[in-house]
Image (cartoon, rainbow, N blue to C red; front, side, top):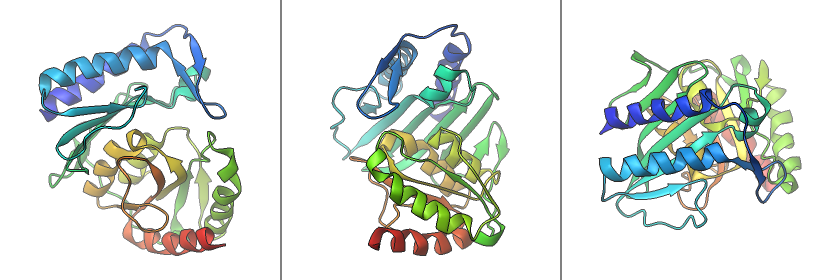
Length: 257
């Protein structure tokens, strides 16, 4: 099954490489857009997943209803993570296909067609980029490069996001913001950056990436330290064990202010 999903992610990514222009529709929230490619690719992925694992439930970003049964197997899909990047020609977007079993993420495939990088992992079997094993860089916060998302769809949370950003940046080396949470998690897993956080994300943003991150040796949770929410979404804090412990204390403090 994993090999079939990896091939599916590659095929879906080719659709974006071939795109010349996109019809854009606004969704709820500031800067929250969907293109015909999001919809086309999600439909393609769903059709194939129904053949690969017909008994699994399906949940994707472009569904009109996001309530599904997570008691069994459920594929959680973002057909195009980084839609704003795609619209702007920024060439940093990906296809993200995760699977949860009994509500726990157990498989993740994230494909960046612009770099031809396929990140993948299955619970208990390690994490990989293409065919190369990847591992987090377990640095202290003082030696870390931060990656963050600003939850632009939820501007009422901006102050909280930047409060934690200021606190962590004062203790770290540098920071980045890419516009794709799924790739951010993969970059932490690969040791390219050392920590990622965002206050409000959805399960399709982090299901696949969370498996890859954990299998690479990382730790991931909500800002409170609670497990990731595979139904309603929530905050995300991900890093190697050393930076995670320091950052978690700062995140909890921000939530209490």
